[in-house]
Image 1 (spheres, one colour):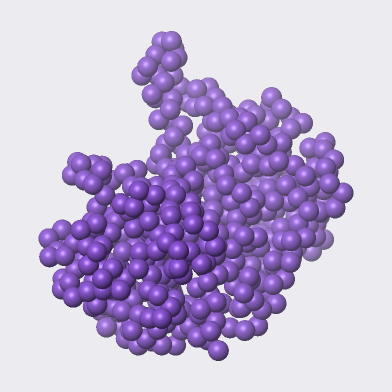
Image 2 (image 1 turned 120 degrees about the vertical axis):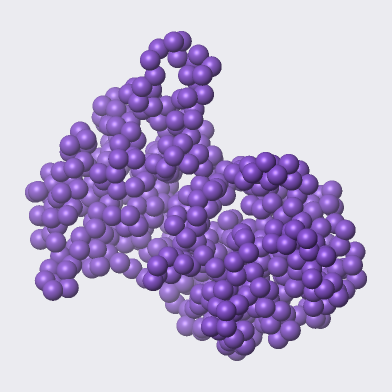
Length: 534
């Protein structure tokens, strides 16, 4: 089933193999016909994660980077849309020399070529490829077939790992292996036999279930790996090693470790700090991508959540996150004074009109009541809108994303994108990926980063309108980070004399936060929130 933990399993395997001394790359295969993840609805698909290159990808790429503690290449992500687009473009330019172009072998060859290129680009010894979707999906058949062909050509170098869920029906109270047996049988019908089974379940697998899966799924028993529910995704690699998965994997690949001891002691220390903290800090995240039936989809903000956790471990705090729907502050379901119960407020990125006035109301409350505030992308833009209205005296100030006829368009579209927007070309029209930013000495941002120039990842179309910068600065708003040419405002803040922490970034710092390298802005925000929580 979807959401069972393939991405975290792949990330954990990559990290463990890396800890054994092997250069490892992780590849995410999305079976969607979307060319990238940029136009996907976050309430259905989760967060869009942006690489340094600017490629908009699946959220699993974020976990890959966090677990490997390094940046990934755009070659490490592929979709059905990318593959089909490439094959069709090649056919249109006579790249196949008049041959009849078919799914087999041309689509599968393209997939294999891309997987091979990803390994070569990263210089990896081992590739871990996650094929999205579930066993039996029509959409991923070509990727499974490409994987089978890879195995046929390299039988000693290719392993198949199935991540499968073992339910414990409440009325029975017994863990059932039959769904996994059926999944393996379905894989067999594609010509694939799994070499390993990662058995997801509410509780650890007992030896009886391991033995049963081994017999009925034709898998060596020591290759049935228990993966019970745990407190944190960062426990997963530690949990896997209880079944010696990295050692067993290397034996199956005919490899020996390049380091004597497991090289993830620092990871264990991070997990210990995460678990050991007792002092509580309550943080409110004001979002709007929560509406998925009767459930809350936190995945829409997964990088923000993880960045907060990384910072929490660094400052020795246990953070409790509350999801407050911005739309509830607009329709009267919640009063903005509820924010007084929290030590800090985060307004993350987003698009569109829904919930905007609710977010602006929460920003004003946090500013006026000196609650540490951290605005990310849209959270910075709306912070500028609120300040323009409430402090700079610019009545009706707004972003032209919401009100194209605003009397004071303090946030406006990037000039280079107006033509694309007029033509309705919304996909891949934003400022995306890593851009440099220069910090102003004497500001909070410069002190936090402890350097003058930084590089951060972006994903947006709108910017602070240059026509209003001087008026906003005279009113007390500090633009502490700017593009090297001084045209684009990257960070806005209030001085410590006015507010303990009131800062917004045009970029997405959460994309570059790692467990072993927490982002300095998130650390600074949590330190400020911790002082309020005392």
